[in-house]
Amino acid sequence: MTPGTGTEGLLRELAPRVLGAVVRRYGNFADAEDAVQEALLAATTAWAAEGRPDNPLGWLVRVASRRMADQYRQQEARRRREDLAASWSLSMSPEGPHPAPGHDDSLILMFMCCHPSLTPASAIPLTLRAVGGLTTREIAAAFLVPEATMAQRISRAKAKVKASDEPFTLPSPDARPERLRSVLHVLYLLFNEGYASSNGPDLARSDLSGEAIRLVRGVRDALPEDPEVAGLLALMLLTDARRPARTRGDGELVPLAEQDRTLWDRALIAEGVALITLTLRQGQVGEYQVQGAIAAVHDQAARYADTDWSEILSLYGLLERMTGNPMVTLNRAVAAAMADGPGTGLALIDGLGERLGDHHRLHAVRAHLLELAGDNPTAIVEFRAAAAGTTNLRERHYLTTKAASLATERADG
Image 1 (cartoon, rainbow, N blue to C red):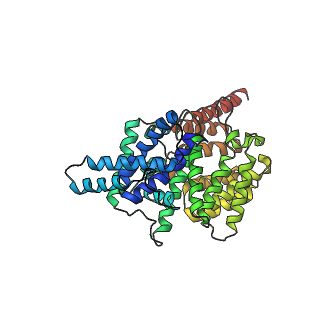
Image 2 (image 1 turned 90 degrees about the horizontal axis):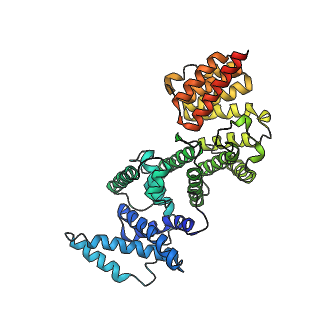
Image 3 (image 1 turned 120 degrees about the vertical axis):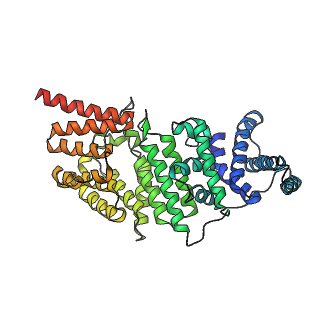
């Protein structure tokens, strides 16, 4: 799903600008989004046969506007809309309506797609469709659900946005920080799903993580001074830089300690480190900046043995105080084990089961720390429990293999 340099990439780049122009001109986000999707599909066919127009943006806005006019004409019971549609048609120039110069349109669309009434499960696909320019079929394939199921999910999400009757403008200054937090959270979840898929045969989905990076770059273009936007972008870049080394040729998982760091993307690391360094100097530290700083410490270590675990432990402590998130505590336990010994890490995760339940990552971390402590029999049990709990097939195979390897060592010993 990462946009390329051809027609597909151009359409995804133009999609939010077209939608912004259509919504500004005619209102009704839900109807406009449907019309823009039809225009994007029409462009795929028409441009392949006739060539790309001189003004692709104007072409798309014109076609989407005609779709809107046609839709309103069909509603004969609403005479007012009939008249309005006719007036739209008469007002169109041969080049189509001039798109509004809305520099912030993509950001406005992002705020609407991440409306507080929507869950992340609804906001993510709506964002991918409205702002990312993806088709319902592409989104359904990415999340391994039937196209009809995804279409219903997107339709319900648009209905909620429509029911909110929110104007097509940026939220008020008072509401903007919380709404921006929702946007960043949705993009963070989208990236995580791409970097470590929650289910399916592949460890990662670079199309999803790449789309998340593209979208957060767009938010940063609109809000260049916001430190948390910069922090999230740095986190994504620094994490994605390790992707080439995370899997072997056969797709199997390679843990951080065993990765070939010469495969890491040094350009992304340099960009991410520079960005997080500059951002932290602003002195308005937030959770995405702290996570970005942790990723930078990992990426700047030439070897796993050179990792500054004390610094990572300190950063996780700060992040834990900020968020109270038990997953952060789990990560802090790993850092503590590496800095001060596995016993320290195991002590930190005692009682986490009350908050995380039977989560497979809790079993996986406990297994790793028990292995470090030399308690292989118990580690085997935990690795097997972790394998049983994950729905990602690559991760399950790795955990099962770890358990089998420790069992073999125990038998040989």
